[in-house]
Image (cartoon, rainbow, N blue to C red; front, side):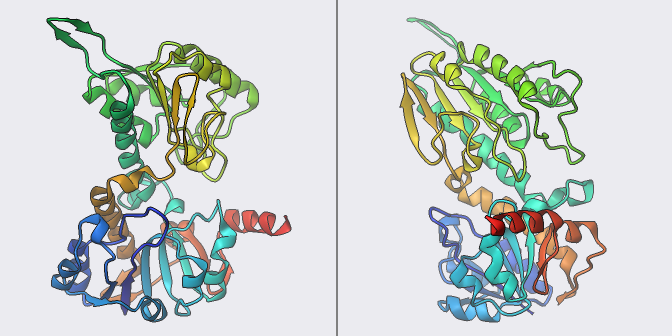
Length: 381
């Protein structure tokens, strides 16, 4: 069985699906691995390292696509690449099945089996395969560092001969993996941190990191789904949070917004009046920008200045730390491959809830009901 590793072609992408150390593990199991030349350079992995790990290098991308039986990727291959896929190939990666399922149609028509890492169920057995959490960890860290680097003030409190500099006040919206990492990093940098999440249960985790948790009475609404993610709330419930955010924004130097609902547009939590109430020189890092943003003024992919308040809306912050992002992702992929490859042979057991939950398509048919519903809706429009 041939496993292929492609050079990612998405704009600005620097990660690679598997680093050489993990290729070595696969080769030791008797698997043939072929790597497109230059695949890992941006992530600090030279072609020579792949050769030393036992992989074969090739400049022929089309040939690799046509011959690979197993294709771990970071991003779903583009339409042109999908049309070259070997019939029956197994592709695993960030497929964006709930955001753009129609983009996967060429691969589905080729009979590819598509596993989406976004759909891996949140159960204890699958934690080591949770690529969403891995990338959120990197993004949360980088968001805090980006804020500290951009803010025209110091993060830590300093006592100098010229006087005392007070610490920066950082407000984190959303206490999921990215939010918690942003809190931890901002605290390490010396900031005073507050955080808000619609899930009251997140308060304990926030406080354990030394930050203050801002709670809002949602009238007994359960804001958490069975997977641990935040649920989509009513406008009335959202407005209670928006009022708190606007009040807190007035004295915050930095807001890091991370709130997202899987498969939906990010909730609009930071109103225009909240931005207008912030002090000049303050900034917002909107990590929810890929899903539209948490701020009503956010322009995904752009940095804008509104009345002296800077709004940063990066679309793929993890590409700024490709070495560790690729390392964490490689480990997620290796653990997932352990479920579908046994002694060098592909064995798909769809009775396994991890495989059935993360499978988007198999044998020319969409297998995930949520993806099928989104695809049907997209096709109707």
